[in-house]
Length: 220
Image 1: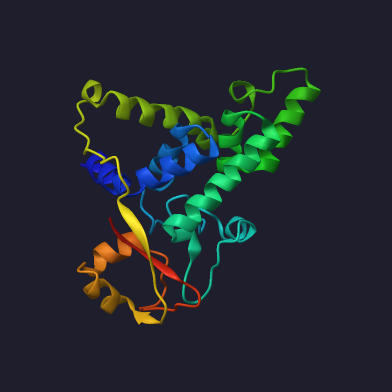
Image 2: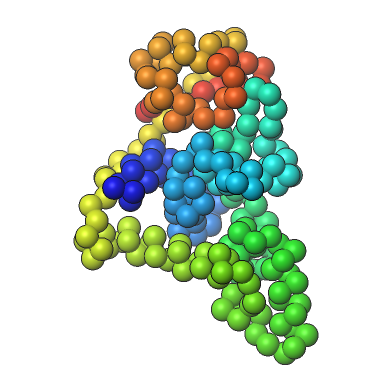
């Protein structure tokens, strides 16, 4: 049931994420990262106050231009948070020149990974992901991504039936030019409030301010 719910949620966002990864020539496996971070729930909020499907902490979100104010939290915005997460992963890959280390840094922090590398260098040990001394959560981070990849590549091997993901966008971006009530926007789009919020989860208030949110996402 959990896998079914998680993959049904993920199917709304995967096409966009894969398209962005391909445009940047990044590994498309990274599209599966929100399965681990948030089970693809854009409303997810951790006890440490990390938010959105990419689980940005408030400070890291601000570093990557994700606005957080009374009306909206871009850490939950589908387009903005995906752009920020891929920017962050690209920066980490540039620092470590290794995708496994970039993923470790995404989970544990770049400073922590660099210190672990420095410790290994000082003691003459290898500095790859396998050999670094890291917390269990980070140690399991890349294996979890591999496990998700295996499950999606061969669902029948694990007794799973996954939903089909159509090879076209699930949503498109629609401009708004004046402030509008969230419930009214959902009704005009022919959606339930829940369906509207699945694509526009960044709103903190029941009103959309056009000055801060010039577009909304609606089903393709």
